[in-house]
Image (cartoon, rainbow, N blue to C red; front, side, top):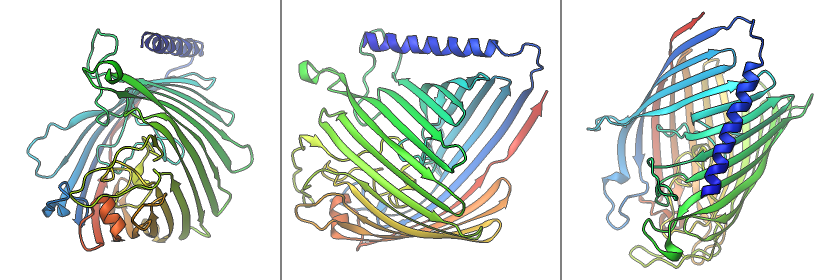
Length: 447
């Protein structure tokens, strides 16, 4: 831990000195332009759910058929001048009628120094977004969304982008060497190192990225001894993403592997691959189709309600898309990769989909998508098919900063779905939502 902490401090110091020198090297005679901007977001989303996962599989309640309204309010303050950029976002999230209103947090708070030669350093609470957001993204559909307390160093120029991200999390300031304990599953990570490289090919609409993440998860018990003493288990996520986008056509592909150990000290050996194609003959129409495969544990045995669980596999083969924007993939009803399976195993995922978007008016968009959902690996006593999901969505821009959107999803689940996810209902699951998003710029001044 001592060497890791020392290395982290050295990297921080070197990064800040490097950017300070680069900024100081700029032409001191130039006139600095200051810009101050104040913005606001008011987001409300009402949802109706008929059938779904219950918090008590043995005693289903009215939760299976629920109605609620979520809200998010953000106050965004941004400042820019020459090589300095600063941004702070205060956020409140809640549910209409909730008694407590204490869910006010700092969603973003960072400072960025950028030199003319393309080098930059960014420090603070950041909303990270890379490639198609499969592995790292803010997951903005979730009203709370996701940010990371981190240092980001990078270079961008001449078609190349290189980002290095360093994070180390504590619950509080402590003097003991291991630091504060993070309960497995309750925190995103103890420490995280990420390296991302992207290259855009000149004169060709082709871009490719490589991603390497070294994630340290807290393992053991807080007061454990010997094998159960608190320590960090490391897992690696590495792979690439490619996108080719000539006129009227786009093809995307990605492949990632996962190795190391999880927070329960089990060996990781997992992978995923995805491909997507979109055809847009004109501004009114587009058609998309794709396929996702995420590996899973072999021959998962699914116990009946009330039955005892199964022992853990020695090797965890279930791929975990860690900090991605999960709502964008695997079906809009969010049954997968936002909640666990009933016995702790994951049988992986197959997601084959096709859909289209129609824009009859400039400000109106209509979309429909069909998903075939199945497990990635074989089950000992069930069929692989999880179900079929149909999604309908519409959005309309009432003004430049006011948008109204709505959606409806219908899923016919199978016995596999019911037993793996404890999904209630007669196999027909329905979900509808209506959202209003208002994002006005309140104030902008330059001097």
